[in-house]
Length: 148
Image (cartoon, rainbow, N blue to C red; front, side, top):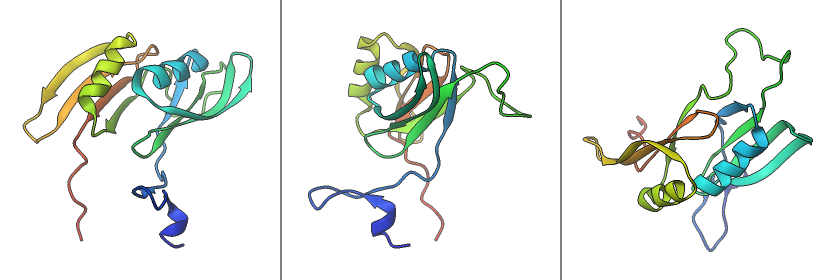
């Protein structure tokens, strides 16, 4: 597999690696959660499969790279031992635009749990909850460099 086949981009902009890890969420009202994540945080809806109020599978991309998958929580269709329920996830999302994202989230009615702060490890962060109760931390920290 070449770098060309695993990255997205054009000659006009930087190449973003294709997502290789997809955090997955379950939602009591998946369609409302999708709308919230698009409106409040700026995710882009890529796919939403299902009928009526039930979302069997949805994908939302993060404009700066990566994305999440989600679907409706359906009684009797638990994924098995160790299953998770709606509102039980915590996600960290890297952004170069944390202050603007915070303003957008507040304007859309997101419940901010941790206000904008500068951390002792050099990140600018805030944490908000979505309507399902999941916690979303947004920050500039990209993780430590990978060992060579």
